[in-house]
Structure formats: structure tokens, C-alpha cells
Amino acid sequence: MLIINLIIIIIFLMLALISRKHFSKYKKLSDRLSLCIFMYLKRFFDLNKTKTDLRKIHVVSDSKLDEICRQYYTKIISICMVVIFVINLACLLLYGYRQFNKGEGSNVIKRGGYDDEISITKIYVGEPDNQREYELSVYPREYTADEFYEEADKVFNGLKSDILGNNEDLQHISGDLNLPVTDKDGRFDISWESDYPEYILPSGRVNLEELRHETEVNLVAEIMYLDFTAKFTYNLVLVPCKKPEELSDEISVVLKQIETNSRNDSSFEIPDEINGNKISISKMDNNSYKKLFFLGIVMCTFTIVFSNNSLSKKKRNRECVLEFLYPSFVNRISLLIGSGMNIRNCFISIIADADNNILTRELEFTVNQIKAGYDEATAYEELGIRIGIPVYNRLMSHISQNLRMGTGDLRTIMADEVREAMEVRKENAKKKGERASTKLLFPMIILMAVVIVIIMFPAFVGI
Image (cartoon, rainbow, N blue to C red; front, top):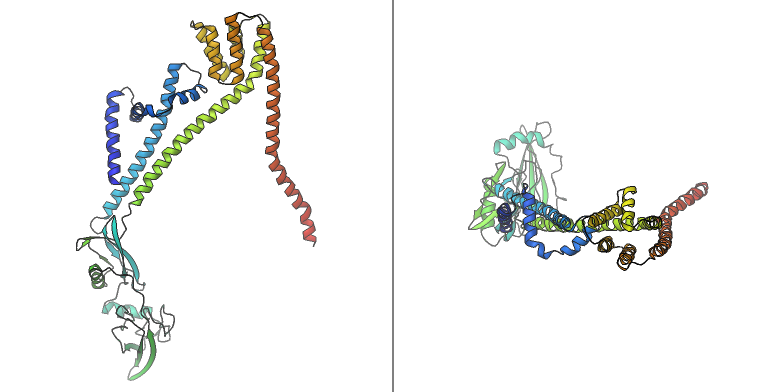
């Protein structure tokens, strides 16, 4: 995975050099890089469809539309580059953090305190891609002779205290015992002795590493006060504990030897390598890099999908606005034509009186085309095509045909369009009313449920 990170960095550096040479007029590095990537990958994009969608949102010329389309794609590319860079940087930082922790002292294992239990530390042997797992039993820090007798007076509570420790009962001894060396008041000295000292130490440590079957042990407590002594015998049954699976080679022997020789220390360190096998406490998981890389891909995909959905939503909103304005637009043209105006002056009058909306901007763009010497009939046809709604397209076709053919029935055509537009407006109003009633259905159900609860609750309480 590190190789992929380095390749991505090299690609970014190469693109930065190329973009500085060919796109030096852009001050921001992100703009240069995104534009450079767009120029190399634009043949894979459906630019015509994107321009068609953008043209329905922006009222601009073809040259300006090309620039807006380029800005649209470069923005998406910039976001994806930022995501890729951040994910790539996170992978490198994660790798650097792990390498830093692999330095001197990285394989230090902390022991528990004097009263802690045996802990299990996982050791990983081999290369990161092919590691074997080994569980090393790490015993808590042990007292020296002086420390043991110094601390014993503070810990143990007398002969009557529970000697089982974490064991179930005397017939199932598989862990350490609590064997005090003095009573609560310090008047009596207590010594412990067993007939299997290799299994039960005077300190209470139960060593079952070499035990292979259940063994009965007599544990004798000798209580001494001046010249008096008393002995009590406890019959114990030692149960062998389950051992973790050991390595088939001598690595486990070396690890156990290191652990045994350092039991008087608060911590101990294992080597980075034993017999050519790499040793580490934490598992080198390459899946972390893969997960981050996959997250970057998901985020880039989400960015692209979100941008496309946003563009589609703007296009739908534009179509709804144009459909809503169509009846009043047709009615205004019909009235102005009836007063003796031509289509061009009708558009100019509508632009002067109407608010700044998408229809006004489209009409203004068409008027500017005609003033610049563009063919009037062709400009009206292109207006209907740009708007992209059937009713507008049909209206502009009638107007264009009237200009070319010189027919005099434009007023009749506009009157028919006004009647049809009003019918369409009524249908749209009915549909919106039906949708509103459907949306109100759920709140009505909630209110009905609340009313039922209010009515039924007193009856249940009365019962």
C-alpha cells in the first residue's frame, strides 16, 4: 500500500509541473491541477449532456457555456483531489507512526504490579504479510526477598483469610494462592510448606507449567508464637491449566526465558528479531491502508453523485418555474399583439415590466441576439429549444413560422394558446391540491390516534 501512496504523490507532482507549464495564468495550484486533469480526461466525459443540463440553468452564450461546463467539472475534480490527498496523507502518517513506534524500545512489555494477575501479550512473528501469532504469559512483577517481607505486613489479613485467591475451591486449584506470612496484629509469624514445592512456592505462586494431570498436595501452615507452634494441613488438588498454543520453533523458549529473567523489573523488552524472524507486539495490519483508500474512493463517488443530483434538482426547479410562468407569459404576449406590437417589442415590454427570473433572462438573451443581427425567426426557434419545455417550443415554432410565412393568423394562434395554457394551469392546480391532501393524510392519522387515546384513557383508568 505504501507503493500506491508514493505513486499517487509522484502523479500529483508530475501534474503540478505540467499544469505550471501549460496553465500558469491560474494562481491557485488546485485550479491548475484540476484543469490539467480535465483537459486530459475530458474525452471520457459526456460534455454535450452536461452542457444541455447547464444550459437549462444558466442563460449564457455557447462560449460562456463551455467555460461554465469546464468550471463544473474542475470543481468536482478539485474536491476529489482534496479527498485523495487527505486519504493518501492519512495513510502515510499512519505508516510513519507505526514505523516511529518500531524504533528503539518499541517492543517493551509493561508488567503488572505486584498484586496483578497474569496477563497475555500477543507476539507476532514474521513479515507483516505472513505473521504467526503467539501468546506470551506475562507474570506480574515479583518481590525480591526484602520487598516481599516488607510488603507482606501491609497486604495479608491473617490465617483466617481466604487462601483460595481466584480458585473455585480447594479441590480445583489452578491459580495462585494468598499465603500470609503474618497475622493481622503481627504477633504471629506464619510459614508455609508443601510436599510439592515445585508447584506451590512459599510466596503463594502456583506454577502449573510443568503439571500434566491432577495432583493432590498437602499444604502445611506453621503458626509460631514464642516457643509455641501449631500446624494445620490443607488437602489441595492442583488442576493443570490450559496453555496457549506454542510455536513449533525455539522462539517461545527465548520469549519465556526473557520473561522469567525479568520478573523483578517493572517492564522488559523483547528483541525485534529472533533467529531471522521479525518480532512485534502489535500486528502489522495492512488492511488499515486499504480501508482508508476505499474510503477515499467512496467519498469521491459520493462527490460526483451529489454534484449530478444537485444539477438535476436545479434543472427540475427551473422547469417548474417556467411551467408556472407560461400561462401569464402567453396571456401577456396575446394582449400586446392585440395592441399592435410585434413579437420583438412584446419581449422588450415583458422584460421591462417583469421581475428578474429565468424566463426574463432567456427573453433578454434572445433580444440581444436579434439586436446583434441574428435572424429573428431562428432566434425564436432557438429560444424554444433552449427552454426545452414542449409548450414553449410549440409557441416559439408558431411565432417563427408566422415570421417566415407572413401569415396573419397569429392572434388566433395566441388566443388558442391562452385557452390551452389556462387549462394546463387548472390541471396543475388540481395535481398540487391532490399532493397536498396526500401529505396531510399522515398528520391526520396521528391526530386521530391522539384523539382515540384521549377518549379511551379515562375508561381504562376507571377500570
